[in-house]
Amino acid sequence: MRGVEYRGLARIEGPVVITERSRNVSFNEVVAVYDRDEGRRLGRVVDMSEDWTAIQIFGNTTGLSADDARVEFLGKPMELRVGKGLLGRIFNGLGEPIDGYGKIFSSTCLDVNGLPINPYARTYPRDFIQTGISAIDGMNTLIRGQKLPIFSGNGLPHNRLAAQIVRQAKILGSGGDSAEPFVVVFCAMGVKYDVARFFLDDFERTGVLSNVVVFLSLADAPSLERLVAPRCALTAAEYLAYTENMHVLVVMTDMTNYCEALREVSSIRGEVPSRKGYPGYLYSDLASLYERAGKISGSTGSITQIPILTMPNDDISHPIPDLSGYITEGQIVLDREMSQKGIYPPVAGLPSLSRLMKDGIGPGMTREDHKDVSSQLFAAYSKVKQVRNLASIIGEEELSEGDKQYIKFGEQFERIFLSQDEYENRDIERTLNLGWLALTEIPRDELLRIKQELLEKYLDPILAAKEAGIEIGTRRPR
Image 1 (cartoon, one colour):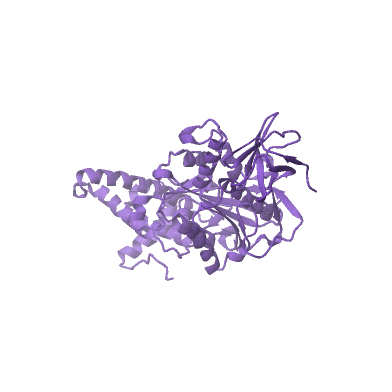
Image 2 (cartoon, helix red, strand yellow):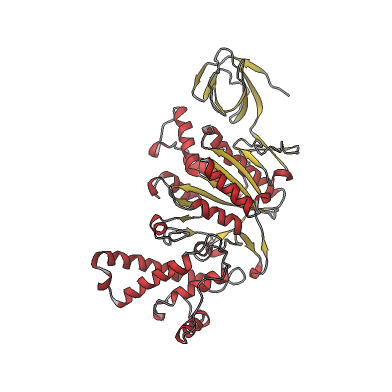
C-alpha cells in the first residue's frame, strides 16, 4: 500500500534533500522521491526536527528539481527479503539481486538495522575453528561466534588470507574427530572491481560459491550504499544462523572504506567532527555492526565475523583500527616487513592476539600442549625482536651465544611455522608439532612456560631424533 505523497523540497544539498514534512516520520524510514524526468529514487531518513526532515538518497540527486519532486514516506525501515534461496546469490549493497536470477522467492522481510540482542541470551563462544593457518590456529585461535578482524595495509595479502580462511575454515567436534562446515556471507564495501572479481573467482574455483551469499558495493557506488551493505549482509547472516541454524562466517572488506563513507556523510550533514574528521559516534556505529556476531541460546547456529580493514599509513593507532580493537575480541595484524621478506601469511607475532583463545583450546578441543606451546612461542619471539634490535646496533657477530640461538630460532620459526603455502591446509596437530620443532633451537632450560611432563612427551622425542641424525620433515607433501 502506497503512502501519502508530498510535493516539493525545501532544498537539495548533495545526496541529502530537505523536506518540511516531519509529522509521523521515523528515523531510518525508507522514502521514495519521484521526479518528473528521472523516475523513482529511494532514500532513508537520516535526521529530523519539528519542522523538517533530512533524507539521504541512495545514489545522486543529479537532475532532481526541488519544485517538481514528490516525496513518499513508506512507513517502514529498509528491509531485506530473506529465504533459503539466499545461498549462491549475488546482491548489490542495497540487497537487490545483480546475478540475473531474479528476486528471492520468500515472503519474509527483515529490518536491515537488526534487533537488539538480550545479553543474557548470548552463549559464551568456546568452539575451536580450524583455519588451517598455523599463525592463527597455533597462536591467535579463532573461536566460533568471535569477531576477529584482520588489520592490514595497502598492498599486503589480506585478500588472499581471507579467501584461504573461507576455503579452509571448519569447526572441530569434541577431540577434533569431526568437523562442521560454514556457510559464508561475503560483503565488499568500496573495493575495486578486480578485488571483487578475485573473491568471486576464488569461490567459484574452489567450489564454495554455492554456500556463499555475496553483497557487492563497489568503489563507484554511492557512499550511502556502503553504509547499508554490511547491514544487509549481517541481516542475511542472522537469518541463516538463527532461523536456519547454520554456522555463518561473515567476511567484510574493507571497513576503512565504510568509515570513510561515514565521515563523508557526516560532513555533508554538517556534524561536528572528532578525531581526524570522523564523527564522534564512529565507535557506536562500528559496534552496531561488530556486536551482531555471536551465539544465542535456543539456536544451534552462530555468526563469526572477520572484518578486514586497511590501516592508513600502517598506523595501528588510527581511529578505525583503534576503535575496532576496543570492540572486537582481538586482531590479526599483517606486517609489511615480513611480507617484504617473502613470508606468507605475514602475521605479526606480537601485535596479534585472540582474547577468546584460552577458552577454545586444550584437552578435548585441540591438544593438551596447545596453551603452553603458544605461550612459549610468544615469549621466545618477543626475545627475538629484542635481540634483532640489538644486532642492528652492535652487529650480529658481537652477540652472545645465547642471543645467537634466539636469532636462529627466529629464522626457523618464521620459515617452518609462520610461512606456508596459500593452499596448504594444516591441521592443529601439524601446527603444534611444527611449533615444537621450532622450539628445539632454544636451550631446554629456557623453556620455562612449558610443563615438565609436556617437554618429556613432545620435545624429547624430537631432540632424540635430531641427535640420531633422523631428518624431520617440515612440510607435508601437497
